[in-house]
Amino acid sequence: MKKVEAIIRPENFQALRDKLEGVGINGLTVSEVAGCGQQKGQQGLFRGNAFEIKLLPKVKVEMVVEAEHIDEIVQIIQSTCSTNTIGDGKIFILPVENAIRIRTGEDGVQAIV
Image (cartoon, one colour):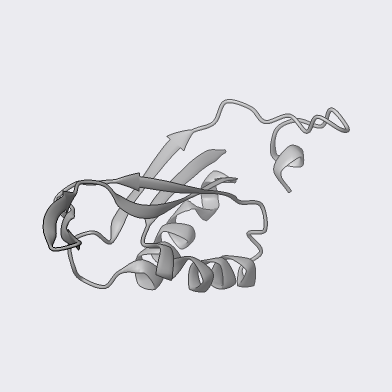
C-alpha cells in the first residue's frame, strides 16, 4: 500500500475529486492548507497600503491505495491539476506499512477498500 499526498490549487479540487471517483477512489482526506514554494506569495493592497502575502491557500488531498494503482493516480492528478504555471503543487508518495479499520478490525488492503 502507498499513501499519496497531493498539494493542489483549491480551484482544481472538484475536477480531481470527480476523476478519482470515476476510477473507484472514494476514500480521501482533504485539508485546507497554506504554503509557499517557488510561487513565493503575492502582493496585496489594504486601504492603500501594500503588503506581502507569504502563504497561499492550497488543498491537501491524501489517500491510501494499493501500490499497483499509483501510476494511474499520479497521471490523473497531473493531468487534472496542471496549469503549467508555478504553484500547481506537488505529489508525495509514501509507503504504508499497514492500515486497520477501527470498526471491524480489518487490516491491510481490506481496510482501505
